[in-house]
Length: 141
Image 1 (cartoon, rainbow, N blue to C red):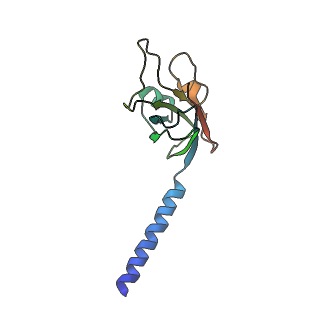
Image 2: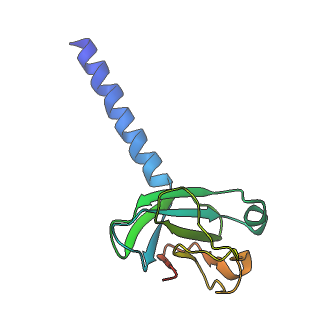
Image 3: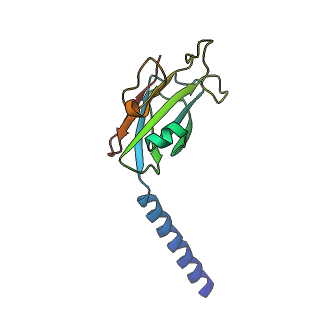
């Protein structure tokens, strides 16, 4: 009987700890539009500063099946006031953004903020506030 009480006490404390950790971790809603539903995977990376962006130091990386359009999900653990997200749809599931001979992406890609259609995304153009509102990314068609 004493062992059952101790076990219930440990399980109860574990549940409370897990709930506290989940509550302490902030998650940011993300919506990705223009997906080709049912084709490949969505690959997304997050950067928390200009330095991280330029050095490719990731704050988070997510891979999801591209099974809905739009695709909504949460990215957890991001810190700071701003973030930059970049994404592409890996249509052939080879783990990389495929490009043509001129280096232009041939798979759908996009970024948060207001990325340029000419050239790769920059920190300045793609940073957005972490304010609890959904971050929307529109992939190229």
